[in-house]
Image 1 (cartoon, rainbow, N blue to C red):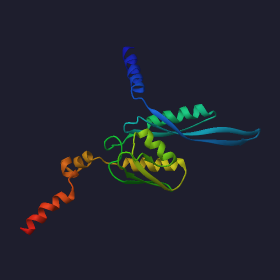
Image 2 (image 1 turned 180 degrees about the horizontal axis):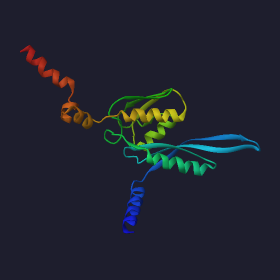
Image 3 (image 1 turned 90 degrees about the vertical axis):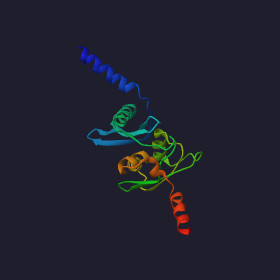
Image 4 (image 1 turned 120 degrees about the horizontal axis):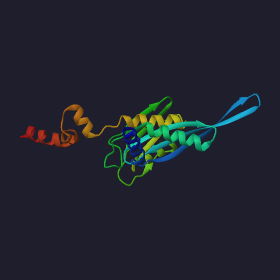
Length: 191
């Protein structure tokens, strides 16, 4: 009995501690034609994030809009991913992502630029906590494809720490400017 209560309290802690913000991206009314007429249902697309580097999306279908949104939000919380951010405000490097006919291009931006992105991509960046980014959607305007392409690109994002660990080097070696390494070599060749 005590073990079950302990498990329940851990689950409650896990649900309550991370405070997530959510953004409704799209609602679609779908109809099913039956013998007596039409039955309407609703499909919702929601993006959820902690605004500190974690984001996820989910979709839900139900007969009523609030129920569809609730299902989509729960699905999004189950499918979260962590994205490394530079200074907690922008991306580390430029990236591209694809899903189906949707293609997105994202670029880092200096402080004060803001989020220059359209529709569903903007929702993903706001929930992720990105403050400065320039993004362009090329191809499909379908919000499902745009969000999946955006998350595909964000999945390719790598911080200098991750790259250094993968290559067995120090972070300073990865971040070293190429001009700084070439200058002493040029001076030595002249002497």
